[in-house]
Length: 207
Image 1 (tube, rainbow, N blue to C red):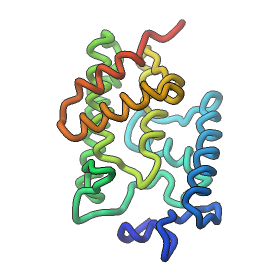
Image 2 (image 1 turned 45 degrees about the horizontal axis):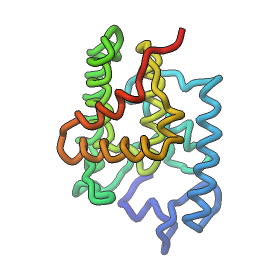
Image 3 (image 1 turned 45 degrees about the vertical axis):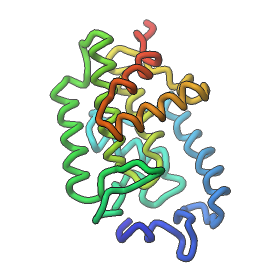
């Protein structure tokens, strides 16, 4: 996808261009959620392979949204001249700086040996910091939260811990706390609130 913000929409509407032939935003939302849920379910038996780098992150997005958007797995291309504002919260502008920041975060993750070998307190603190910062990058036009959750679920597992994704998805109170904590991290640069929420979701992996 190239062009400005409006290039993502079906001309004359606020409906994202999609592979489903839908021109109703609510119908698109419902079907997108169903299709992405099925793609996530596939990952139990066939996870997206990768090195926990930026390419791996984008490959997860491509897998989840391949049925819905032509730009699945691609960085968003707008807005480029200003921070992206969504629900009153600011995200990186699209372009080279966003790419550079994302790649720096993943390089830092590799330098930290993908958070392996850490005691749980340090592990959760570093996980919260990375999750909060990656969310501010907000690489994709749509589907950032779902992509982040799948990516971090795999990362946490590889590091010897377990992320309670089911509780995050099904417990409305916990999900609301997570979203609020992530916004707090984004708005203030303080990840302690997000760390507290994740502490209740991360535990030792069952052997």
